Amino acid sequence: MIQVLDLVKSFDGFKALDGLNMTVPDGAIYGLVGPNGAGKSTVLRHITGVWRQDGGDVLVDGERVYENAAVKARIASIPDEFYYFLSASTKDMAGFYRGFYPRFDAARYAALRDVFTTVDEKQSIRRLSKGMQKQAAFWLALCCRPDILVLDEPVDGLDPVMRRQVWGLLMGDVAEHGTTVLVSSHNLRELEDVCDHVGILNHGKVLVERSLSDLQENLVKMQIVFQEKVLPPLPDDMEVLNISQVGRIHTLIIRGSAVEVTNRLAVYAPILMEALPLTLEEIFIYELGGEDYAVRDIVL
Image 1 (tube, one colour):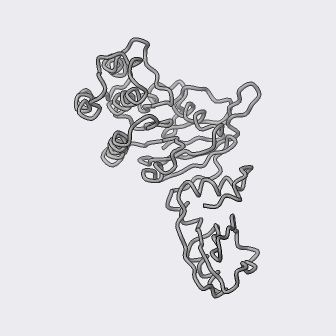
Image 2: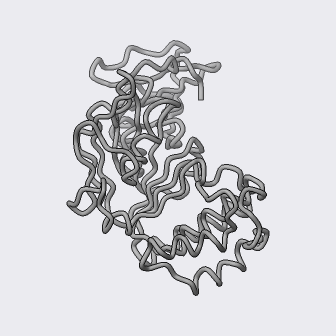
Image 3: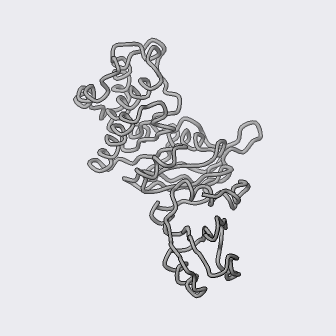
């Protein structure tokens, strides 16, 4: 389990992380989402032990990560900008990784040649395209057999077929070996298909952290039509995050379960009423709508 406790990090007086707390359960695929500049990459660099925190703790199974070689040997990472030696090939980097990761799997490295067929393992990585460099990064990271895999914008630059293959490999490792995957991405639609836990980050703090199913059960989109065109006054204690109208159809984003909200609105005797689940993208927008994002007038 990854625990981030009251994490603080400042750069030249700017507080990038401001007492951040988050928990990533074992065997989870945890999606970390947030607007640009929210601190996502900064969190990942602390979890992988690249940066020392100014305050707080980063723990893996109760052990601190920073300058802890034993813990770092259990963590593999693919940052947004993949690091490699200037003239190194994928095969050269595999030899380098083998020296750091005691569970590096040479047999899997050989088997994955059949997946990453467009990558010439003997060619200098710097001469590969961005998409091929990302494939090389996955090839190497998956062979490390890590307990924890930390990914920053992992499939950026990959074509749709390769994206599906990579996600299939990752989900297979989670199912078969209990690998914990922490992934930061702006592609919320893609995260929705693979993640079981989500943390929404803004201004250096995690605003919301829940399983994806809990998040989707806590917000509901109601499409409703009344006898009159005007929306009747709603109860003061009903937390309505957004109201929009097209013709006679009112669309309301309301905090609460679909059953609870439907029962409360039924007393107004609507002509038509339907509860719809929200996508992760919509949840992201409306959760941040309570902060300083000017999104309350967006019609989805």
